[in-house]
Image (tube, rainbow, N blue to C red):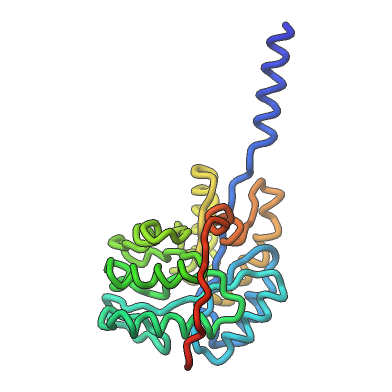
Length: 253
């Protein structure tokens, strides 16, 4: 009987000490509209803000986000198969190594408080091993992480990050490919289901009013529902702690 009671207590202890599923939410495409950036920075809880480089309000939004406890990422434009325009700071498959590295460093320097980066578009560049290797080497030198937005099934970004010792995550769900409350709700439910099954899930949304309004309502409920919201750096903390960033010069604009 004593053995049985001990086993029951042990099982109960394990069940109650289990980590709740982890959710990572990233808001992309910030930097142009200040009001959208302010609303993203004001979202409740631990949210990650991915800011396009050299945008009119990118630096201001980054500072607002940091003051609100958000994590700041560079949202680096990368060449895509559809040949969509990319804007300033784009990394393309036509660039030689020196130009790509210089462009990336300037973009990182333009983003106050940057802790890592993810790709904006990039269905072409993220499928190319050599340029993605250059990207990861620059991140490694600075002790930064990478989140693969997974805009193509052919991405090699996570593989190249692992080869270069860069801590990385990969996106599971885009919340707002369809910008209406019902569609966003369905994708959010998918996001939670993946976290339930795998222990963690990463969702990317955009600063549409519909997305931000939905998240303002839903994020405060997550803890009561048995989830924990985390910054990317918190999820990757053990790996980031093992990195040894080097002192690097600041590239001139």
